[in-house]
Amino acid sequence: QFQPVESGGGLVHPGGSLRLSCAVFGFTFDYYAIGWLRQAPGKEREGVSCISSIDGSTYYGDSVEGRFTIPKDNAKNTVYLQMNSLKPEDTAVYYCAAHGGSACPAQSYEYAYWGQGTQVTVSS
Image (cartoon, rainbow, N blue to C red; front, side):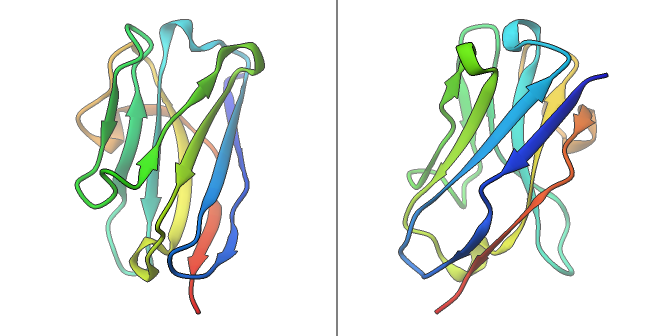
C-alpha cells in the first residue's frame, strides 16, 4: 500500500526554521511526483511545493517562494520541506502527497496518495 508519512511539525517562533520529513512506503520516487500542501483553519488547501521525478524540477507557491525548499534523499525514500523565515501565516496542517505521475500536478485534487498531516504553528 502506498503511504506517505509526515513528521517534524511543531511550534516555532516567527523568523525561525523547521524541517518536515515525508517518508514514503510501498513505492519509490522514480515514477511519482511528491508534493507538500497545507491547510489553515477556514481556508482552502494550498499547494506549497512539489518535486518532479522526471528531472527533479521543483515548484513553489508564491507565498513561500524564496523561503522554502524541497530537497529529497532517494536512498532514504524521503522528501523534506525546509521552511525558513517562518511567518504566522504559515501556520497550518502540512500534508505530503504523491501524484500518480512523474510531473507535478496543477491541482491538489490530482494527488492520489496522502499522508495524515502534521501541524505547524508559527507564533511568538
